[in-house]
Image 1 (cartoon, rainbow, N blue to C red):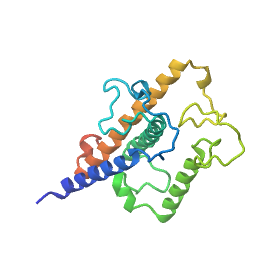
Image 2: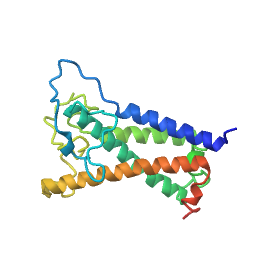
Image 3: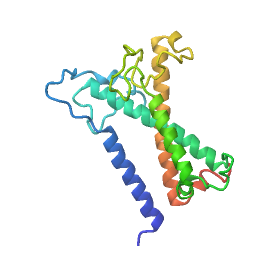
Image 4: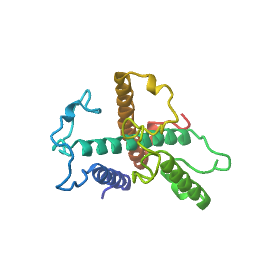
Length: 214
């Protein structure tokens, strides 16, 4: 008989694989599309050491640049969420809590112990973050139904909206690409990190990676 924790681990891995496949699956493009095909994607952002241009599933084998940019944005967004997830997991595992939430456990156990009002606050926060963190010149949600004019965004995921800069416009093109590559790599590492934390929690040995309260 398969132990429960091993079965749970397999379920987590399978669910993650299905979600990843769905998230990164190429979008269907009409035959009349004017999308540039056969583009050289080996020099694009993300094709970097040590793997270089790595596309074992052939998702962008046709060289569809628009589809590649869409998938790159999906990966970037997942990476940003995963980085927040890793930080959140580590902070709550260390025992840090908002006032009134001292008795709520960390990890998956928190899901069964959150009051309904907390769920409502979380959903409202997620909605506001999703609405704010997008290209407002193409909003809402890429429908391009506003009168703000042409977007100043330099790439998908550039959500400065002509307001926040932090010195970005003073950087050279090479420096910008390097910083974007750093964010992409950190996001990739965070996706693996949060998945590893979830799997080890289901296995019951996450405390061997993260001693109680560090």
